Length: 174
Length: 349
Image 1 (cartoon, helix red, strand yellow):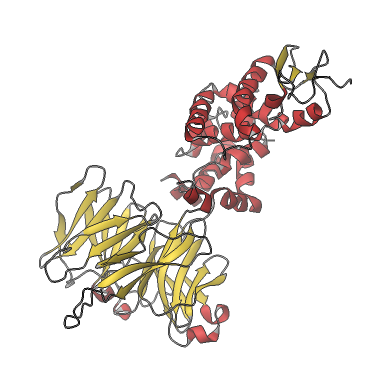
Image 2 (cartoon, chains in turn purple, brown):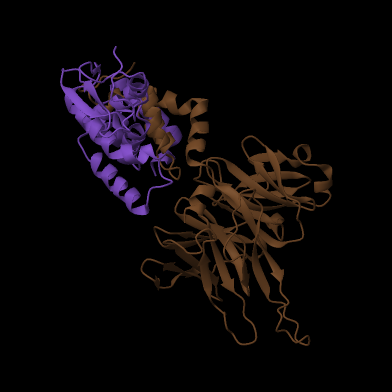
């Protein structure tokens, strides 16, 4: 793998890297944004992903990857200066607004996102989706949680087991 | 694995690590981990794994003891010497190693009544002219402000037990809600009330009984207590299931936790539900006088706050871990102040 000449991005244009989704779509993105992924960061620090090479991501499809990169591009500037300390209240509020809208999506997309965030080790994105799912189930009964998250209907054995536990912990429903 | 997802992208198929991440983020003030345990076998094994509750605590923090509220008699500067002014002042005395100090640590001529959800209820103390008389203030030492809250005022008249409920959101007191006075109780104890389920419980008349106010049904009921409790110091609290009412009391160097049986006339044959032997947990010097249970917090752990002649101690009811939190022991009517607080959240204000 040849080390690209573009270097650390201080000489004019920011360094770009190419990511290749499981369905062979190529995404060109700033190295700083892709580096939000701990997994990619190592490869990028080694000089990978530049020029015609590209970094293949066999576990992430293009729809998910484009969503992941949307998050990374938005969060890269804040991450670059070490998170919150220098950010103004306005910047933080803007990121928060972005985050809230970002996870306002279909559950199957949320699922793909959290899996991708987990695989690519993007901590902020993983927490964001986890928080969203937690918000979806908070205050719900076990049965409602099952329905909300698309669990299949319980088998008779499962139902019996739930009933038994419900007798023991029934107060948890109140 | 015992899951049959409808499709590959269902949250039901989420791997354990990620389920764990989700469940950690459920707010700490609901019994969510128990609900989660009932969702399916796999979730149950995740939340019942011993590390989960530790991670949950790390993630959310625990309400910490930030200080104690105590009364001290004040001698204000403008006092001319002839006119001794015994008006108490509520003081917030920090006990925590965190650098938390309230902006207004003292409230002259106010008396604290109770602490709940990080907010303090203060009663005005009448003096010369009835300046503060009949005033009630809700104070949040952390923000010096308050969020939405309810105040339940309970009183006993010749014929009735009555309550009024104030809501900060509507800024009005409710209509008077009353019930016939069946027992010869004449006053309410100014001790912390207990919140169990949707009911608030107040001790009355030297522990002769308990007045229960159901917030949902807006109903008052009276519970008589055994006469052995007369004039003992007791602390009302929720039992471990958070469904039943109990109380803690100390005698012979032991803390006893009793359930309150609302429908039984004769308590004498019923033993305590729980006994914690303070003699084994505290230095002997602390037990030279009978300690007093002064407070109780019910969060992820259930902690008693115990006053002794040697200082204040917390006792974790599960682990029986005892911690001395303050050497100071000269306070009158001390109430512990617990709240969620992190130095970061404070400095960012």
